[in-house]
Length: 83
Image (cartoon, rainbow, N blue to C red; front, side, top):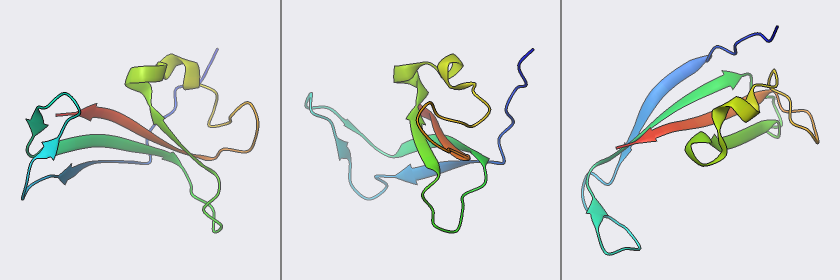
């Protein structure tokens, strides 16, 4: 049975307050709110983090206990939603 990962920190990052965030399709967003969550601890060298936009990759694929297939990943940054 797998253990569900719990975030160590969750927050919103808001940008494009002053001017619109222009999209390639010609539209724009203003303001933009990015919801994110952190899992695990960032090491002193800050080289053990992985940024995941799971809307594109699938969150279920990352339930690996914080480890990647090719290295030691102890800090996961998960971008959840953009509005």
